[in-house]
Image (cartoon, rainbow, N blue to C red; front, top):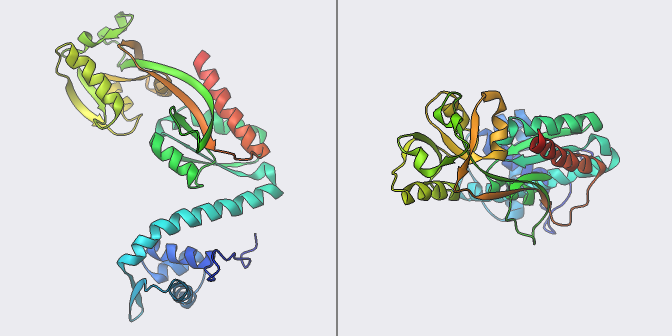
Length: 309
């Protein structure tokens, strides 16, 4: 889309360029740095900001000699502008992709742990079949959904349940709990790990706010065992480093544990266990381009290959 073909967003004349400039001023911290990033002059930055304030009827900046200081209203507006501009930029990219489908930019959101093994394999398939550029975005399962709804991601890797009013989904696989541990640990001689086996073990544990923590800890306490938590982590994947250093054992599930191949860890089933259903998700009703179809197939086939590999 030509740079001078800026769309109007509201009947009042609010323009995308004004919002882009406003966002960059707050990101960069000054009009001078924003001008450098956007490749325009500082007076042009000031003019766009003044036009935005006039259109909205809100004062967003306090002005002094050669400096504008954002007011509280500006920071409150930024949160909404980020969502709107990201969605519009994705629209611009989608329009370009309609003209050159095999060069589409594909954004995939997932928990960061899938960046170890799964996503590199997915990207390799996409690259082999299209000329698309791939962007990966990490986050919790809830954040993955938010990225898709906000237009920041086309596809996501998540777990059920998901809201069927907001998302369509394709099954990727089911997982059960496993204990991961350093090679040579006594658990390697067992077929499974039960709650009483974890007595006197140091544990690398997921964030206490997450449901999986509650399940694991309740199983231990039911056996009369008070867990010895060495360290807590808030993002799946972080436990692999601690466990590989011999600092403890951790409870995860077998789909996530596949991502730890490079760490040389061992795993055994855990009882009692929960069942997790992994899915690829996208915004409900989304029409797929050829490149997006390739990307979804790549995610599904990579998970299927991991299940048998």
